[in-house]
Image 1: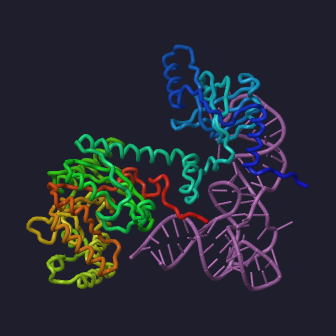
Image 2: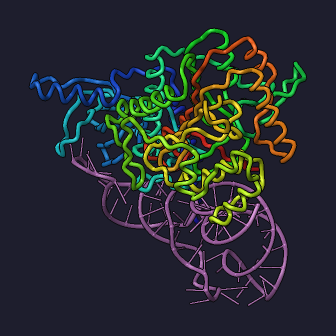
Image 3: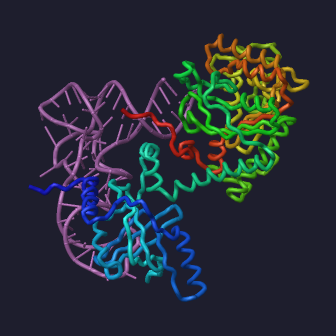
Length: 497
RNA sequence: GGGCCGUUAGCUCAGCUUGGUCAGAGCACCGGACUUUUAAUCCGGGUGUCCAGGGUUCGAAUCCCUGACGGCCCA
């Protein structure tokens, strides 16, 4: 009868019990760390360099990520967020505590105190005189050499991904933080005020997207998660803020793929007395600033492309882009000399796959199929058909176009901006056209009329330049990641039964 | 929404084509040795709902069907 070997968790719980029996608290409240790992190492290297003899005595702490035991001498690699540091535990130096090692595992947190030395192989090491358990782990870590590869488990248990693939994963998220910091400081330096507007809204307006629906019990009212911050920020412009921005989570009830997650982060900004050309300059400078600040470079590598972010960026009118890359002259369609159905027929002849739908959707599909894949270097597509842009002001001299741009890099939409429509009557007509399209096509991805916003506009909004920039897309671009899941710590996953 | 691929030990994977010593390897883990290691080493040990459910068969990780979850491509 072979003896039963306990599973990993049981075996670790037995160790935990043995520690308790020895009077050791496996989850003590206090830590006596004197230095993060990187600081301890720097301190040692400085003192060695200055040749002042005495090696520093430190207390370091971290997770045990490897152990190499040789009887009465054990080496342990401790990791904290600043890096890895080797600790040596010798029976003759730690005395009675040495046998406790038997019940410590890879994955546990400990602290260790002692002088810093260099081992004979040259490794900077804390030669422990004492050590304490800080937290016992009762689950085994993923394999040390191959890490954690299973994509599903990496996203569902991101902490394991971070533990096992630390050197590859954590830097991206640190960079994400720095990019957002760079954007924020850029905006603040230009005199913008950061604000917060409601996430739960009575009308999901301001963008073309399906909202998440929820319900407020006390008010007994249906509410939506915001699909944009636009209309609230414009209310603030009406109220007299001249420069506002919000970096916030946006929710859109649509599919999940390599560059879409149902909740994502967008920055919107609104600047009174500015127009879309001012916003264009701001976007170029902002993205360039972020790349400079975080990566100290004006060019970034994205897959096989070397992307030059130095302003100014190419500016290409929408109709010219469709003509250049799609071979279609939009003039007759814009002027009403030909119908949307005619456009669909012509586009299909040119090899594009278009389904019947509202005209704004047809234009949008045409843009994404014909043009976007070609826009590798940063490009502003400007002057959109009015039907696509119910919140943008008409372009003078072009009755069917509006002052709008979208910015594309490596074929990916990065930003969207308008000279904002501030004529309340015109805005009402545009909303009505959207409602009409919704009725005709039963399309949920049209904009909705927000009466409260129209009321605000009637009090007068100054000429304003507005911007929405996808922070996740920006982070993908600058960090070279090709899937949004790799720049979101917890991407959306289907729950399992 | 459509197509393709994947799911086997804690982790990384083999085994599936051709059903039958097929429950396997490395790391981890368990027991033992070891006072300068770096994926430590040496000796011994396999710890498993082969994603789930159904079917075919004397016999299914393997073949068929359905489903779940994930990934890639397309829309």
